[in-house]
Image (tube, rainbow, N blue to C red):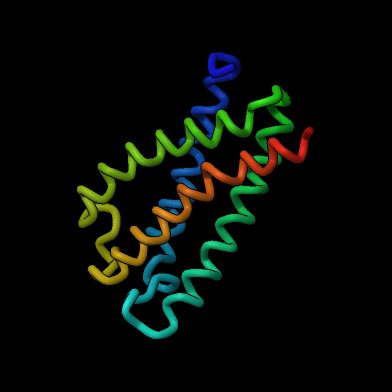
Length: 132
């Protein structure tokens, strides 16, 4: 199960991570707000809904390229692992990657990221049920 098309899975994992990271490098100061502001929850919710839609589209595309039964689950697991490992280094070097974000915005990014990785793991499980 995990050895089939591993290169494609790793490529998608890195592309998803790169896309999300570049989005926040370029647009983070516009979409991330202080978590202690009153409108944080609504903005967070909208950002996570958009994230879920984008992830779902990524999984649909990936399933077309790798139609094996557990391909999207494999992408969710490996993609989350790859992304979390890389994000540990990104957050460690936050001044290099997110120099334009305040510490409150960086906290908002970390909150978004934690929830997004939960989506990355859960969405494939729901997609897998759809196939049965």
